[in-house]
Image (cartoon, rainbow, N blue to C red; front, top):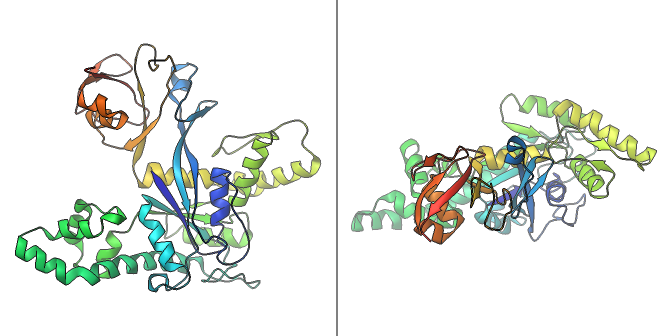
Length: 380
């Protein structure tokens, strides 16, 4: 699972990335601070079953903080985008090539309007962030369109001569982008092959994180943009400050929460800074929005759910006694048998069935639900 963090320079991409990973990356107020993509591990959050089941868990592939399960996902912060990227302008070729790996994209948008379309700072402000949304989507669409257009005649000849469905050939051509045959088939039902609209239908899912929500200019733009776009208001700088404060033991804070507890030993200056974040960001928006943006991308856009396999449903543990040891992210609609193969190849091959929390038998076609705890039965 890989989520790409995208946007123009100076939008706060690297701050957003650092807030989620606490990984040291260069953060600066100049164009193309990020040249080579930064890679790190972030965590989506979900309610841990330990809370409902009233047990003390011992996670192995994830973390649990006071009943909140933190499940790792890979994050990629790519170079800033400028108009004409699909033609190779700026770092466009590298930017678009880096995106091949991502399952979903988070567009970190400078909602303040204080940077122009190239990411250059303007004291006067007044840039419409809605133009950045159209620019990023358009650059990706033109890039995909270019790949298809370059090969379309050859693909059509091959389809006719070898009687191969066109969607299969296009999917193969775009396999590096993660495009599936069914995606192409759906796009062909709605749009004509070789058009920009057809390319747009194959675009990776994008979540808009309207950043710099702590600024008054951004708040005005966010209110307007929410009328026509689905977005998550956020303040990457505020989230980074809270994560750093929590790491230093100054506050108790779970990523995504709408509040935090200040510990003893915090200076008056630090208290004022923390209260500012609470008043300007967390009260009006419910949180800093950064964790919510990542969660919405993974659970919402990609339709993933969290499932917890155990070796013994009675003990809720693995063979070593670790309670609720692992959390797996799988597509909604995944069957128990499909899940068995994801847990381990041998388990999938020897699959017999499974047990749910009520110790009731569940079959191969049982569709897993978010938060399910299951024991998989298999021939050893």
